[in-house]
Image (tube, rainbow, N blue to C red; front, top):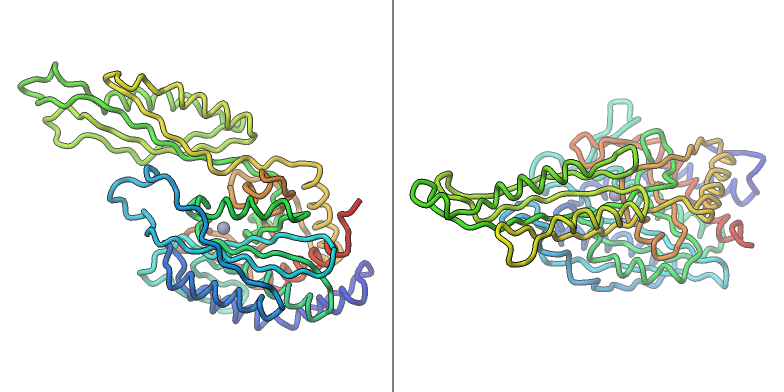
Length: 412
Ligand SMILES: [Zn+2]
């Protein structure tokens, strides 16, 4: 579909028509990227796709730098022996930079990882019979986002639109971005805005406000004893954990922007032994930074003295700060909406409780919008699907937005 709105310059029209002609190659890229397994910190797959995307950007004249990132996430995040503990071969973070004069610099961030198992029959993109939709692992989260952003940068270069950008690719977003957060933060000050290619919200909306998210572990310590011979000498860690969990159950206030979920839990061994250890993992979501602080205090208050019996230890890692709507983000979202209008597209604004690297960038001082990827749904499930027409539409939107940012639309 070609676009000829009165709001578009000749160059814009040329850019958008060029992208419309790239529909087949966008789909070919998507098919290729989806078939590369990048779940579970799978090093060969991550290396392959990183090589492909950075190669495309290098061909545009971008410099490519691989940085090792911070060591890793805290060990207590994963249950001992739990299958979803990632391997410790941490993938590097790729940073590609293309500078075109002194114009405003945009930071683009995409993650290469998905949540999908390397085994099983969910490994490739399958199109519907009419070709209107496709199902596949990571098809919207976020292989589709990678496809449109790279094609948009190529189309901009083809149209002779000079834009300065940095594109960061990390491989641990689905595991909390512990490894790449420092690299994301370090780039923030050099740029005027951040754009992330997370999938659009279900109705195609742009997220302008996101809650924060954090992980915690409640660990209780008791004293083991044989149930029949020495029950009164024992101190049950499971009972202590249950008491702590009842207190946690009173913490959520969803209407007030405070969510606390507990699970998985584990504790005890044989039924005839008073258990001396128990653990519960949990996740919090909070609408504002102050609510996050309240939650930190509420959880910390569960902890006992180190020597107490039963003892309660609290560990927490609130790794994704809340991303409130700021005047700068409102302005950036307004610019994205005006681009959509010029293209004859709808781009409603919305809030979400989901988190992404946009939360980290914005806390580091960079106004960021983060749902510029493709439309679809079923994220993280075997029903993950994409609306194929959104490849071209979102690529046009991304290209036009970058072009207007580069032309100084946010200056002053
Ligand atoms: Zn994602």
